[in-house]
Image 1: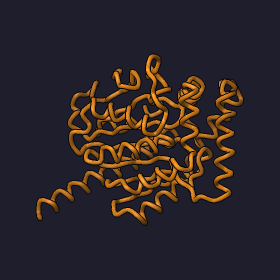
Image 2: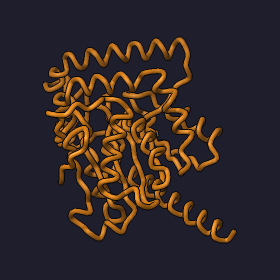
Image 3: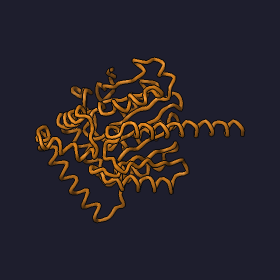
Length: 301
């Protein structure tokens, strides 16, 4: 549990190498959070992955234990990528090709930007529940109404601290039961996040130009990419992740894989931690073997 003084904030992060120095020799995994949530929801997944990977989680500006008072951070994809990039460099994760990046929901957009900035350090990318949609009048209308829902949620978010709205909030995110501890964490994070940051994130997550850029950037990632989606997701329509997978599969020469969970919602890391961890491990191992094979072929030439 540490703080790192970046140019944007005092960034709170956790690194399993602090408790287990042997993790410094393992491949690293950086987790990028979704909208209006701290890094605490990754804890069960980190516990599953830590025996084989060095796991780093952090609280983005405007969430959790990160301190923005006295700083003036910009709440944009580029700004969030900048603070994560400073953490990557602070921890030395950019010095060799030994880094997996996992982005969830809005964090998928930030993670994709990081993948391009640190392409020489990247082993793999995993994008969880962060899809794209064909631009039609219907999807434009849907984004318009989603923007209104974001405004309403932020103006009246304290109502989600009481039942039955608290349970309704969680059930929209998680199709399967999750531990009560994480019910409370998710609601607490949402209701206590910085309003300016949360509004800004909600807006760029549905901005058409930001989504077009995101699509181009996902296709441009040169390392193996895993698109992961819960097909019972009521927060972000799962078809968008399938569309993203199909676009990259058709347009990128780099490996692209899909993990589809028919019975899970927006929080697979909490709804079915073992299954989700197994899919990530499989993807990480595939990427590591991919680069070993590439190195052998290069040395053979």
